[in-house]
Amino acid sequence: MSTILITGASGMIGQYLTSSLLHKKHRVFAVDSKTNDFIGKDSNYSFTQCDINDKRAICNIMESNHIDVVVHLANSVDNDIDSLVTDAEIKKSKVTDKYIYSAADKCGVGCFILLSTTEVYGLQKGREPIRETIAEKAITNYSVMKLNSEKLMEKAFKKSSTIPVVARVAPIYDAEHTDNLHSHVFDHKENVGYVFGEGDYGFTFCCVFNLIDFINGIISVPQGKYSGVYNVCDSRQLNANEIIQYEKDRHRIGAVIRRSPGSEKAMLFNKGKMRTDYRYFDPTITYNNWSFDNTRAKRIAPMRWNLSNTK
Image 1 (cartoon, one colour):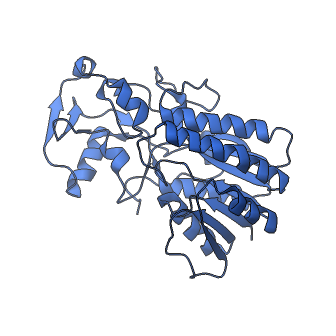
Image 2: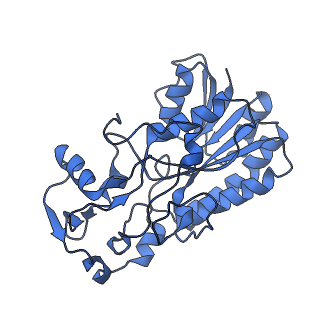
């Protein structure tokens, strides 16, 4: 049994992770500004309601308990913040980074898992799967924020006994939360779904349960066995037709229009909105490279979840 501190514990990912860890009989310390349904339900669960930048409250948890693993989910879209990432969110994340890595180091935390994003790779051409070793091209506010967090963590733990793990996660979904999928096939200006040609082009996402399995995999082995950066995503891309059909079957999308391949190049490219809104997908980049190599992560978890078996 390990003792784990989760930040952003009341978010979607945080609650899935909490449920899984408690089921495995781990001791969980959770922090979030919002409450959740786990409070008072399990003797292995301790919850502190506070802002992520309440340094005193969070450092006190690390100082008063032997924390084996910190899972830092706070300041993350798909978990606890809105898709619109402004300078305020970037500033808040920097404040968090300044103290939380230092506190983990001083308190002898064994492993620190940071939730990051595949957005740090930016817009890539070609067809070779994008590996963790490729140079980052962070251009959106969210990717810049997360890449800054990665670099600060690397520096903070360079001479530390704390093992850093970065999970670069593709856009998250489960059976009910499909906003990230929906945004890739829906034109909000025209209020209509769309595909180019036969809709057989694909995008890479991450079923939330693949992420949970990955985190569990890190926690379950001796600390230090796994470290560094990992692409965490589904093993197979979802093509546009699959997303359309899934959403239509659940009455989340109505009319769908078919556009000619190549017509996306003539569409307006909204650089400003793409930079600030995590969920804004610009059709002009439909045929960019969205394939990520998850070979390293699959050594830790099988990545067995997908759109057909998610829950």
